[in-house]
Image (cartoon, rainbow, N blue to C red; front, side):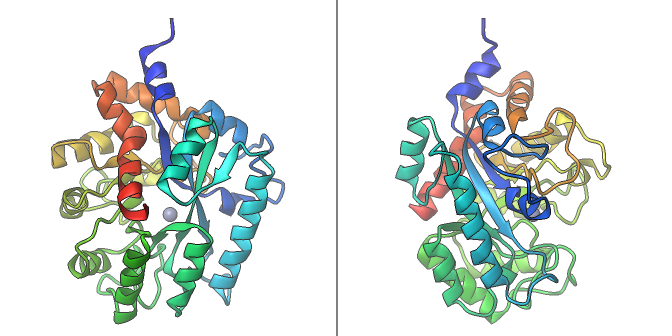
Length: 324
Ligand SMILES: [Zn+2]
């Protein structure tokens, strides 16, 4: 008989909010979505892992390019080509009904997202262009932010500027989710003070469990939850326990903590960061391993309904509300 957790996993819509396939793809030109590879992500293992909706990140290292926007467009073209090699088994989508119809057909819905304000440059119109290409969330900063929004490694006094507020306005007008992972504390306060809309943190943990700058304070977790947002549980060992060795138990510590802090699981989602991390927890080595997390949730006493929400329904709720 099939294990209960496997049935839950197979029945659920599994959504991963953060995958850095494109970064690994650029660093290792032989890496392809379509081909079985040595890296974290490919079509065969996405299917094996039961992933139904995959957010694919476009990111550029801040020092590497003069014109990040132009580079982002090149990377989006490459991602589209790679998805097209998958013979329709992965489809780039940009609205909720397309997600549902793609998943119903047994295919994987891919959603484009951009990481780091440098990709916007200093021109609000670039946001419109990225939206047209399918961008459905923007991570406002990377570890080193921009002039208009501080990142986790920036000066702690660096906040959101007037231009940063215009970015927030445009994202809200278009229906693009605002991702605050990587954003420093001051800028995150500024974002939450400036807009009362739902925000998400696609790949972050709880600072109270592990005091990494990339993790969220209790206040920020509670506020994201109060607004109906989600926090994607990140798998990077250094964010989980500040060492290069972690297990699924460490992922569960963050999930359990956030559940206890907020009183429910409505703000918990998945944000693996696969292909953007050089080390992974034992048991979560690549995209085929998501069922092991479902087993851990099941073994920790989470109900079928709660597991289904964490695996995907929570993230889809926010996507539907904001992106339509
Ligand atoms: Zn990141």
